[in-house]
Length: 366
Ligand code: M6R
Image (cartoon, rainbow, N blue to C red; front, side, top):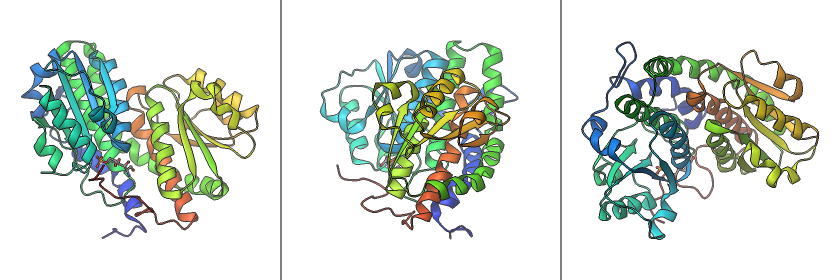
């Protein structure tokens, strides 16, 4: 049932090229310049008239929500807020029928997310679900939705659910941009083409497995790890850190790279591995200066870079090369080597990768 893989997590990591394709199949027609998702089409007015989109989720799904915030605001210019479902439900949030709430959940059973939806509905908001499990409580409780087509995710650490959530949310952003005219025609078409190429780029990114394993061997005994990224890759840094914590029990934190000097830089010494997401597109030069700051404090630098990079290569202790894509779609690629790195570190530490201690696949109690 693990399809020849040692763990479900690894199998699920490797399924990503296919499940991303499954998720956009029949919805994304790059050549025709069409994006079509029934749940969105039927409610297009609600989305485009929304004063705000509020995303509620927990854990990895919340990280996908953060990526979506950047993508939806950039493409469709609708203000987006992302909230932990657990905070939202208890803080008497300001919400009305002018708001659209998007709930993201792999299992569709997370108690806090479900409660947040009920509250939003009571206050008159239109609630849209992005779930993986068909017929789950959240998919039934929402007014409309779009499923991710990741297939069953068994490993407690979420991997393919994350990338398929981002795929769905990016398609929503593009669909809204099309109707609102907030992206130029050429950009719109370019993103559609680019999205269609993502599965093969994810496949290519999976070939970083060997280097990820090699790096894992060097850092498996670390007691702390820092993950840094900017822009679209800030949520990827958070997600990279969560993956490592969950399955290897190494303390890790994700930060927006620029926040480093507001605190975490104090932690950097020769024993601190810092994983920096530094693709060529995006805020490359800024990230390079962050890398220099880490280096001058003797931190160990593991950088995720675009294939052919030279500048970061000179500074970093290790580089992991990934294929180039546009900045907004890069989380779908940059997240892959981070999943592999956590996986190998956990295996080398003899951890129970698929069922880490104290964790449940779906958190149905608060
Ligand atoms: O099923 P959900 O997406 O609602 O689950 C949310 C979180 O419990 C989940 O993402 C959790 O953080 C994972 N263990 C992350 O790998």
